[in-house]
Each structure stands twice: as C-alpha cells, then as structure tokens.
Picture 1 (cartoon, one colour):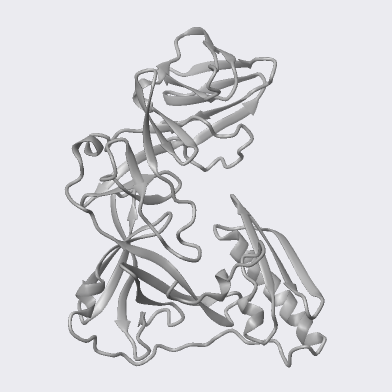
Picture 2 (cartoon, helix red, strand yellow; picture 1 turned 90 degrees about the vertical axis):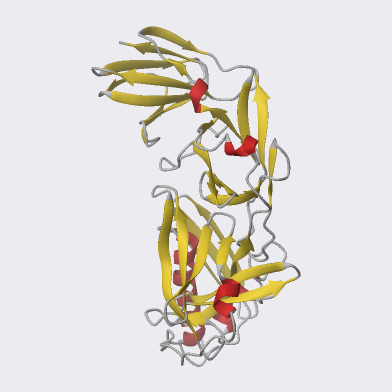
Length: 386
C-alpha cells in the first residue's frame, strides 16, 4: 500500500478509525458507511468527545458520500458549539499550482491502460506536456473523456486548471503501477488520497476461445426475487480492447483470459477501496449450453431463451432453482396474463434494451405494445398470451 489514506483506514469493522473530516481539526473519529441503490447512510463517532451522528436516506449516485457531508457538518458544528474545537473549518479554496516541465519520458511512461473493480481507463499524452484520461463507455463502444489537460505541478501531481482540488499521480509497489487520485472530500475542507486504478496490459493475443465469446449476451439467472433496483440491467457481455478482456455487468472489470479456456481470472491487486468485489469469469456447460459465472452470479445464454407462444405457457423452475427467462415478440400488441403458483412468485418484464418496464407478485394482466420483450420468472407460473 504505497499511499496512506485516512478515509480507508480500517479497524474492527469500521471503514476508518481516523475519520479525516474530524482528523483535520485534531479529533479522532470512527466511520462506517453503507449503500444500496439510490440510498445511503453513515455512522460517525467521536468517542473521546462522546458525540455521534447517524445519517440515513441520503440519495444520489454516491449516496454514502452525500451522507458523510451531512454527518461531518453536524459533528463539526457540535464540536465548535461545545468549545471542543476552536471554530468550524472552512472549505478549501485552492488555486492551480505552478507548472513543472516533466523530465525525460515521464508522460510516455505513465501512459497506458488502468483499471479498478468497475472502471476501465486509458491515459494518453496530450499536447503541451499534458495528460488526458478517458473512461471506457459500453454504450458508445469506445472512450469518453474524463479528465483532460492535466499538467505536472511543482508538487509532483498532475492537475487541471479547472479543478485545482483534483490531482493525479503515479506510484509503484513491487511490480505494480498505480494511478492515485487526490480530491476534496467531506464538505470540502480537506483532501484525501485514493489508489484509483492499476496499470494493466495484455499478455499476448486474445485466445480464440475467448474471442469467440465477444458479442454474445448472457442473462442473470439467480438474482434474489426481492432485489429492488429497477435500473440494474440483467445483461452480461464481454468486450475486448487491445487484447484486454473486460466484463460488462454493473461496471467494467478487467480479467485475465490467458488463465485457461474456461476461466478468465481476476488480475487486480489494489489496496484500500478500488480493488473490492472482483471475481473470476468462469464458463460452465449446463444442458449443453455455455453459461457464465461471475463470482456467485450465474448467467444463461440469451440465444437459447425459449419463445412464448400464443395461448397458455407453463413456466417451471427446475431443481437448480435458477430463474427462467422467456422471449415474447409482440407484432400487433399483446395482452399477457401472468398467474404465478401458490408462492405468488416474483416476475419481471424487460424491453429489448433490458430496461425493466413491469414487475410484480401474483396475478396481473399487462398490455404490451409492438416490440420484443424478455420475461423473467423467479417461481413456477402460467403465462397466457392473448
């Protein structure tokens, strides 16, 4: 771990035992955050001062981060009111530092591909001794600029003029090279370091067996029926960039396709937070079909999904317990009447882009307009297509 991070200073179940927003005013704090889709919470304790705050329900794409902002402000104001700190700290007001000319081939040396547990990045040399960082976008099937015009500064970090509080540097640990991000955190009164990505490179030409899997689609079969994120896609795909294999499901994870023909192995070792939740991709043959497994999640091939026909369709969950998918092509609009079994099992309907449009338990009659639909059943059910 070549870079110290107070925000990821773990201890006894806490995310940090040196909460940085309190640490900058000389107060020891413990913090634990948590997220579910569109909902976040945080608990911060200042044990010596006998103060604590618990914020729940903060929303947004970085919801526990939003909760942390609120929690820090509450605790810092309480500490100031009690006279335990001299005053409420002010947010940082930073200006771009003086530029420094990179030595030798530094810009070429740090250029390349970097990855973390859900993001794939490319760093390239720009004009005027600058660096540009792009992130891979599956929708665009290409790269989207993230940070541009980063210049080396007199403190050894690369920073853009537009955001002086956000800087980037590169650190080596053993045979690994990391991209490090320094940014304003909390409500903006301190900066924190995070090892954000690890440099990656292909070991050779992508094996044919993995190249043949590119462009295919798989669908999640063992999601819990109570999972409530309607925006989460069940679709799993594989992409390749310069012989690097990337999984596309809930983010982009880089895996090593040279491990074996049936297993692409996790290949990241990133301290702190950005190396979490990484898994092998494993192929499994089930009833003559090639399924994928990512960690404990299993995916069936989309190309073998059975069609729903007019009239009554019996959907049976087999002994493995995996959910069943069906395809329905509505030519002139269809009425679908779903009757789950005695368990009142959960079902979901997705459009052709795998956007969830209906979900429910128990009986329901649904009118579908012209188009292609994918129906997911967690329990045995009858589906009458009219």
